[in-house]
Amino acid sequence: MANLSLRIIFGLLYVVIIVASTFLGTPYFELLMALSVFFSVKEMAQLSQNKTIQYIWYIPLLLCFSIILFTVFGAQKLDLCKLIFIWIIQMTSLFVSYTSLRKRSKINNVSTSIYLFLPLMALAIWFNQSQTNSFEYLLLYFITIWIYDSMAYLVGKKFGKRPVFPKVSPKKTIEGTIGGIILTIIIIFLIKRHLLDIPENVVLISLVVIFFGIFGDFVESYMKRKLSIKDSGNLIPGHGGILDRMDSIYLSVLPYLILISLFR
Image 1 (cartoon, rainbow, N blue to C red):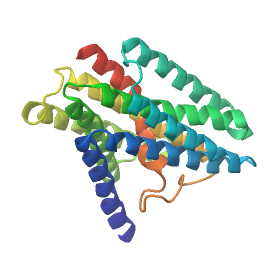
Image 2: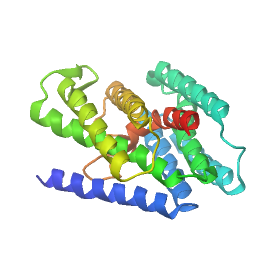
Image 3: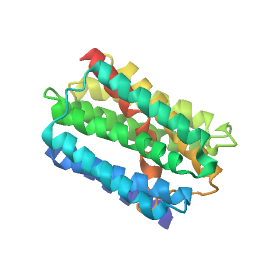
Image 4: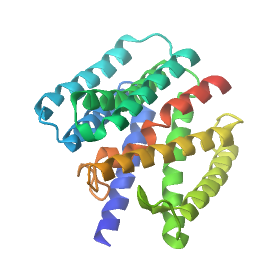
């Protein structure tokens, strides 16, 4: 019960911080993304237990600095082609990380850093450059992630019996996944109708975000299982590390931005 209370309290705090930084805009949201990259890469470096871990601290510092530079001084406009190119690099980095995970090599640390860095960098730059409904679009993205996570957890806890991938993440069930998707789509449709000025294709966009969010969740679960750990850290009480809280975000951000670029 105490752990559940901590999970709820710090989960709500996490939501408040993201919504507040999104509402306040530049430079608060960009700073939040920079801090997220910093702690994500730091946690992954510690999980790898590489002997060169003391040097890995330079990587998140460099990445955080890069986000700030890109945002403050302005990068080239992130059009559809650039977003697709960034996405290809991220997926390539994920593949390299996947194949070299057990080797705990420098190339694994670098590829994982790129995999974690690129989507949050792109999101920060896009938010900084976007002029029309950027707050609503960003809120739609995070709301979709949060609602699905909550609905899948509640449905799975109540009705879940059959794991989706027992060897990777035995607690995530087919019932929870399907129930989470259905309830999320219904809620997002109601939000579109009554609250936010967001695209007509919101159902398709939400489905894509959910799909890649689930994929990202399983990717991190697989990595943790291969490294024989339960949580990526203890930064967020009741949730574990920042990787545990943002695992569904890393792989769903770029597909979301690509769809928004197509439909806006």
